Length: 399
Image 1 (tube, rainbow, N blue to C red):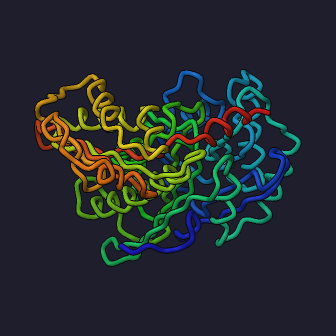
Image 2 (image 1 turned 180 degrees about the vertical axis):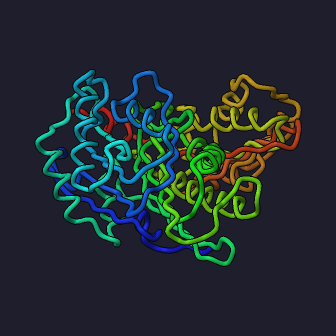
C-alpha cells in the first residue's frame, strides 16, 4: 500500500470541483464529487436528534446502497430549517441529477455552517451549474477547500494497493475543526474508491474503520447536527469482486482504515485554536469499550485540555477524568505517562524533577498513556488542546 495524491479524484472514474457561489463571505463554498459509473454506497451519520435536512434525506437514500454524486456546501448547515430545509435538499438532488444526467435518488447532499438559516437556493443553483461545468479528474483538491468552514487547511488522503494483482485506489476529503464529538460519525467526510465491492461489505468496512479513527476523535465534546461519512466505490479498477471474509476484503479494509485514521489525525491537528496535537492511549483495559471510554473521557476533559495548552503536567486532572469514565478502573493498578516520562505508577506519583515532568508538555505533539493494568485491550483518542483562540472563534462564529 502506497500513499498517492489526488484525494477523491485519485480513483478511476471520479471527477470533482469546488466553486464559489457566495454562501460564505469569502472563498469557495460548494463542491461536487461525481462518479462516471454507478457506485456502491455506504455511510454513517450523526446520532444527534436534531439532524440536518441533508442527513435525514441521505439516511433514506443510502438504504438502496447506490450513489453517483455528492453535492456539498459550506457556510450554511441547513439544520433546524423544518420542511423548507427538506424541500431544498430535494431540489438540490433533482437539479444536480438533471445536470449530471443521473437519478436524483443517487445524489447525496451535505451541508456545514450556521444552524437555523435557510439555504440561499438561488446561489446554490448557480454554484451547482458552475461546479458541474468545472468537474475534473484533478478536482479533488478544489473540492476539499470548498467544504472548509473554520478549518485552516484542507484535509485529504489517498492510497493505492492491489487486489488480486490489480491496482486499486481509495481517496478522501473531509472538513472539521470544531463541534466534533462523534457517535457513529464525525464532521463531513467523503471517500471514493474504484474497488469492486458490494454495499453491505462496504458498510461493514466503513463502520469498523470509523470506530477506531473518526469515531475516536474529539475537539470539544459537542456532536454536530450534520456529521456524515459517505463512501462511494464504483468498481472502475477492474479488480475482482471483494467479498467479506476473504484476504481481499482484509486488504481493502486496511486501506480504508488508514485513510480514516489520517483524516482523524488531520482534524485533531487543526482543531479550532489548537496549538498542540494530542493522542490519548488507554492500554491494558479489561475490554475495548472500557479502554475507549477512558481515552475519550480524558480527551474530552476541558481541565486536561487547558492544562495541555498551559504546558502544565497536572496529572491529577488526567486520573480524575479516567476515574470518571464510568467503567472498571482500579487506582492501585493504574499508571500514567506523559510522552516517555512515567508520572504515576500504580496510582502513586513517581518522584520526578518538576522540569522533567514538564518536558513532554512543551512539545507540539503530546502522547498521554494510561495503563489500566486490568487486561489486554487498548484504544486511542485523537484530540487537541483548548486555547484562548478556541473561545474567541466560537464566541464570534455567528456574528
